[in-house]
View 1 (cartoon, rainbow, N blue to C red):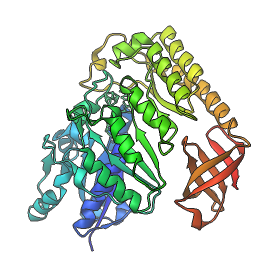
View 2: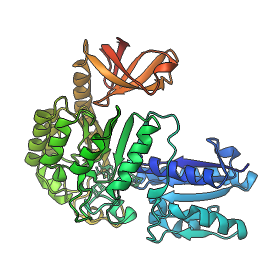
View 3: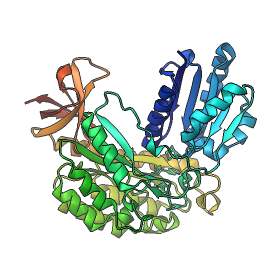
Length: 435
Ligand code: SAH
Ligand code: SF4
Ligand code: F3S
């Protein structure tokens, strides 16, 4: 039996698409393995959102060279970095046999056939052919959660971001199809369904039949069975009252809401083309917390965007202190070729970006710790994920607010909901006992 492995970089969308790629290979008769040294075909599913992502991939390709020399392994590259680079990547790295855009993974079977007939020929397929993999049934194995892509691409063109260039225009998956998929995964026993999209709450804007994100959420909530619905990521500008209302009424929807802020300065937000001000964001965050019982917010923040002054950065710190995010993904601005921000005046020096990131992390860590402390002596409902990697006696799971909880348990509780009384905490982790 031939063996294939898929190495994934980047966001949840890539993780989801890798699951689909694996399923395609399985259907072609391959065994999926983790160890790339034993594989007959290796696919890298890549990211290019920040410079670091690309650097990491160059390192990996170096490693693949020796594997290929030993075993004659077929090397394929897909994902956003492959989409961005196209032909160029083969010029740089002739060891790569297949370059395939993230919108073309549906044509893997055809390409493998071609390659078997004509070895020694590079195959490039990065055109916007739109062979989307939305019909492919990803296999999420025994994991408690499954992901369903509800939109592909993005129309927002935030000025720092390369995603709209590599993932193309936004296309929503028809609601019927999403509902069929969610039902299927829930019936398979998955207890957590994550809806994926670059901007989930603009879902349906391309339909003109009235289907929108609020309606989708309420239809999914109507599916019987006990499961949790998450979604990443909503855009603050598109977070309607209708969505807040559906969330308020349906406990099935996770209380952890990832609401990317990017900057706390209205001036920088405008330069970023985010479509909201500092005040708009604060108003929305407060409304969500007021209306949705138990809501907790996490966010993404960029420091050192062009023209960000100390005062602008203080606005970011101020908003973090006011909203007191449960957690933040914090990044230094990274220049992406072809984006508007890359050619803006007033690029910020790395040393200033680093210093601002450090200060932001300190403020955020304090907020995370305070948030964790609020759980002490409370009983929380936890979806059990499995044994803790560090300590086999301990099990790990997450609350509806997405907090990681560690507790003693046994195999039977895996993939189920349990109630845990929290005894102690660290910055991001809660410790407790099942009650
Ligand atoms: N579509 C999602 C996220 C896409 S990328 C959303 O809008 O929320 C994930 C995060 O990476 C972004 O939220 C942003 O904070 C960060 N990011 C994107 N481009 C970046 C860049 N050029 N430099 C630094 N961070 C960036
Ligand atoms: Fe990028 Fe903005 Fe689209 Fe998110 S919403 S993918 S940050 S352009
Ligand atoms: Fe990276 Fe593409 Fe996701 S650039 S963050 S893998 S959408």
